[in-house]
Structures are given as C-alpha cells and as structure tokens.
Length: 246
Ligand code: NAP
Image 1 (cartoon, protein in one colour):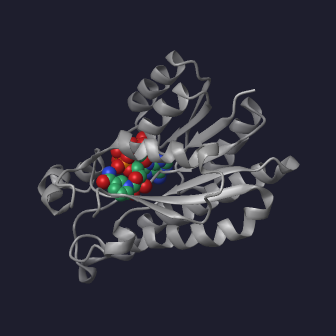
Image 2 (cartoon, protein in one colour):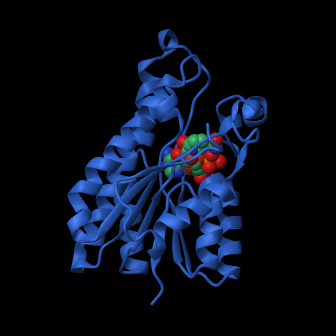
C-alpha cells in the first residue's frame, strides 16, 4: 500500500512542486488549496499521470470547520495518513509595525499559525493511531531568523511561531515514531511575492544571497522530500534552511 501524503497549499509554488516530486516517488496524495481551482486541477493531473491517486481538498486552513471536513474526506478516501507537508501560508503588503492593523494580524496568524497548528493536530491524531508514526514537515521561512523589519514583521513572527511549534511538537511525539521538522525557505521564485504586492522581489534581492541567486520551488521541494524519507530517519525537531546561505 502506498504512503499517503497531505500537502496544504498545493495549488501553486512550493506545495505544487512537492506534490509533483512526491507523486513520482510513489506517494498517494491529498492536495489542499483555498481558491485556485485551475492550479489545483493542473497539479492533480500531473500527479495522476505520474501514477499517484489524488484527492483534492479545497479548504481554507483558517477555518477549523473546513479543516475537519478536509480530514473527514481523507479518512473516507484513504483511511490512513503517513506524511503532512504543512505548507499553506500568506504574506501581506510591505508595511511598518506602526501600520499594522488588527484585521491584518488576525488573517496572518489565523492562516500561518493557528491554521497550521490545527492541521498538524489532526495529522498527529492519525499518525498516532495504531502506533505506525509518520512525518510532519512545517514550512517556515528565513524571515523567522531575519525579522523582516520594514517589510512584514508580522509574517516573520508567524513563521518564528512555526519553528517554536516544530520543536515543541517534535518533543511531544518523538516516542510515537513521529518526526517533526521545519524548513526555512529563503528567496524562492513563486507567486507569493506578487500576492504581497512585490512581483519582482526575488530578483530584486537575489544579490543579497551569498549564492547570488534566488531559489526554485523544486529546490525547496527536494529538501522537503528528503526530510520525509528514511534517509532522514534520525532527524527530528530540526529546522533546515534552504536559502542559498542567506
Ligand atoms: P504561493 O505560490 O503563493 O502558494 C501558496 C499556496 O498556499 C497556494 O496553494 C494557496 O492556495 C495556499 N493557501 C494560501 N492561503 C491558504 C489558506 N488559507 N488555506 C489553504 N491554502 C491556502 O506561495 P509559496 O511561495 O509556494 O509558499 C508556500 C509556503 O512557503 C508558505 O508557507 C510561505 O510562507 C513559505 N515561504 C515561501 C517563500 C518564498 O520566497 N516563496 C520563502 C519562505 C517561506 P490558493 O492560491 O488556492 O488560495
């Protein structure tokens, strides 16, 4: 029986790249997204062509009821879960702390922190069932280290919360044979920057990266899939920078 991987935010960018590689490596997939039906359909088609069974789960991770419904559909379709890639996330427009509003902070933390924690909680309940264990990879950001002053401190703080959550959760479930890691991508070429109002951001800042270039979604996805593999069997509680040295 193939292992089942849930990827949140799989209609584009890093999540989509992880889905394509996972399909080629023999996983069946539950692909979550919020709104981009065309993007999700295209990713699902590619993954099916690579031999994976694919369940599309349209659900806003900021909505706890939608998270429950997503897991119910996974339980019904697969009856198991082996890996969670906790990837769905948003940035916002560049702003100083003095410009931040309650509504903006609420959205950022509802999606990037509370949503990610609730998605992980439901995954843990399933990975613990029957004692089989599994893997959770949370997608953080180099912003968690850098602070993102004058850009989006709220985003950076949300990702620092994910790194802290990763360490705490990994301690709680290590004895259950569940490994929990986070990855901190650096400047990666995806649509995320355009959604934050800065489409050219990765190119503009590439010179600040020690490797002098932006990264690709595939380069992050390769690191994600390595953490999921048995090659990383003694890795847990860690955060891995995929940043070109930034
Ligand atoms: P992206 O291309 O914008 O893709 C984001 C994905 O998340 C999309 O599939 C989107 O779905 C989904 N999503 C957003 N809000 C959601 C919600 N409330 N519920 C469910 N799905 C939701 O971004 P990306 O660059 O691949 O980012 C993926 C992760 O990497 C994020 O956590 C991001 O913070 C992190 N990251 C990215 C970079 C970078 O430079 N790109 C750097 C560091 C960290 P829909 O479009 O269908 O709504």
